[in-house]
Length: 304
Ligand code: 13P
Ligand code: SF4
Image 1 (cartoon, rainbow, N blue to C red):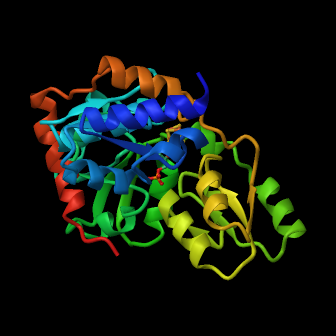
Image 2 (cartoon, rainbow, N blue to C red; image 1 turned 135 degrees about the vertical axis):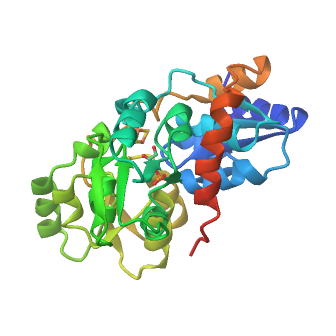
Image 3 (cartoon, helix red, strand yellow; image 1 turned 180 degrees about the vertical axis):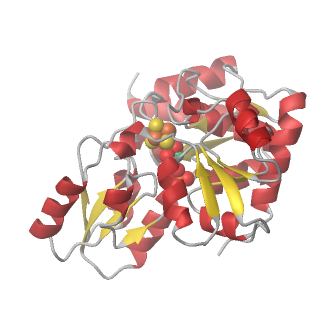
């Protein structure tokens, strides 16, 4: 079967199943190409919460499909590759986070959406890279626990005087980008703004002209008058940037910026999943309800 015929079968089945296909900005090019919505974690959560489709096909990683199941429990959520996980999300467990929380009474827990449903369930509020600063600023307390991404936490801490108890998690993909590599690129292309994701190491973030979520990056590059950009996030973002800005050049800061989990899902996996209506991701009610409180509290914060 050619990619084209797989894509047409997917389209037909999406219609038949009353399904919507959500794809993260890091997905393979051909998966993004057939998605109904492509976006960052925040945009995809909002879409999952409001869609009137009966089935959500989530092309992303496990925690994203869990978030969709938390926000839209009446819908069937399919994750075509059940093995697509997030190593950073795996760096914190609900038990360990609850233990830290009980050792710091009254200190709220802010949890990055890159976390399991069980971890969200012991959290007070969630955040994404797009709204983390606003989420932290929305808290009355002047001390907080931030999990699991220490790099995002450090970045957000720079915007407030609040005291952060940082969890020592990180994204192995973004952590691979080294500041010396960025500096060299900046010397070679002095006209190119360096745009990076806050999951990068603080030494890399310090070199950036703009720090933002993946959708923020897309919007920044589209609006900018610059003709080339150095991109400090996962390679999948390049597809839409190039497609929609043919007159601009995008330089990936390092070939190491590839998340193996985000690259697992193929068109064939999506087709098989729609045919079999498996694998389904369903968060049990006793975890879903407290996890939803943390996600709802985040979603109540107005976007820019
Ligand atoms: P955003 O798309 O929300 O910026 O998140 C990046 C990421 O690492 C998702 O796994
Ligand atoms: Fe997790 Fe990093 Fe991959 Fe995002 S890019 S899914 S944070 S490992």
